[in-house]
Image 1 (cartoon, one colour):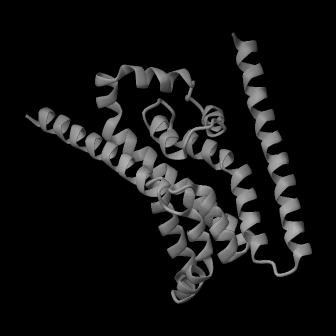
Image 2 (image 1 turned 90 degrees about the vertical axis):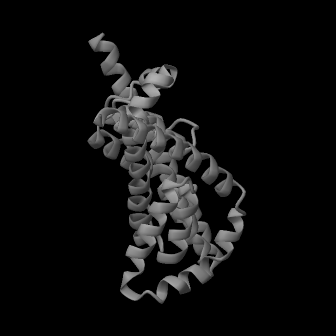
Image 3 (image 1 turned 120 degrees about the horizontal axis):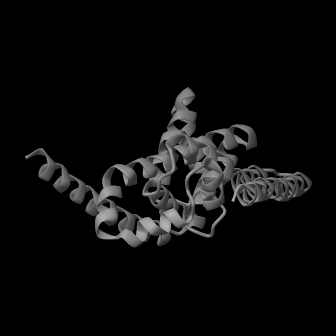
Length: 227
């Protein structure tokens, strides 16, 4: 009798996941994101009131917002405004990866078996991405797909938890570093300092993206040589 109950709970969880994805997507993309950045100073003051707990509070809130689909680049930029580049990058990078992992875990726990039975084409799509190693996760992070749906797709694939972490940590680097630098540059009073931050952001994005492409190219060459 335990199996039908387990199947029912899986179906309920899958339906809940679908409702959360649709609802949060509508909420996030209907939110005036510019207004959030305009309130960055108020957010900074609010975090200051939490004292030494401010980094932990930001990390937890940013991770939860990432889980429900908040664009991570907005969170990275906000972290740069509030904490500066170094700590802003460390906190936002860890928070967004943690949030992505939360979505990955929930998708794998709630929907993988159900989707495999009812919608085999989705499983075939996840397998077609060859998401079986961290380099494949890294490749998926470069695709023009919303992070939320990317996390769900990876959760339904065969990729391991360790590979998800490695591929996501690396895949989030180029735009994460760039967005945090832009946020940190936005609080610079001197226009020359702002220009310096933006220049560094552009160079960092170019070098990191080039490095990731090189890793992916090496993987493709290795796969071809083995075949």
